[in-house]
Image 1 (tube, rainbow, N blue to C red):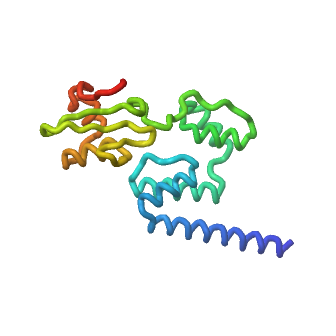
Image 2: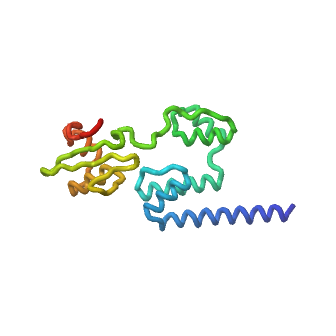
Length: 183
């Protein structure tokens, strides 16, 4: 029996050391590598490009997996107090109690609901030049190149930081007056 306990303690120490190595490795990763790791760990892509945000969320999830996360009681309490809580909490509750529960109707959409449908061409005049952006299912196309956000394109056009929705779809774009296409 003593050997069994010693073996279990060694395995626990090895697992902790492995998690610590993985956490240290996060610090050396680029934003792109962190985004890919996020997809691997959470099973969904991230919209964030904030390195610190990604690093913290990855570290939390990796530690949660290694140490077991919240208790079933805590997860059940979340369900009671916040039925509109993110889907991932409900999934954990269902997995832990083995119950099959229907997915919530308010599941997070894959793309921003504020965006017009894919194929829509947004037109915006700036400094006397007309700029056209095509909405794609997973980003945008501007001047033959793919971009992940409207803000990125607005920055290219103006040379300054802009909210892409405001620039192309909001008041600054003539209250959607400059947005053309099949909308």
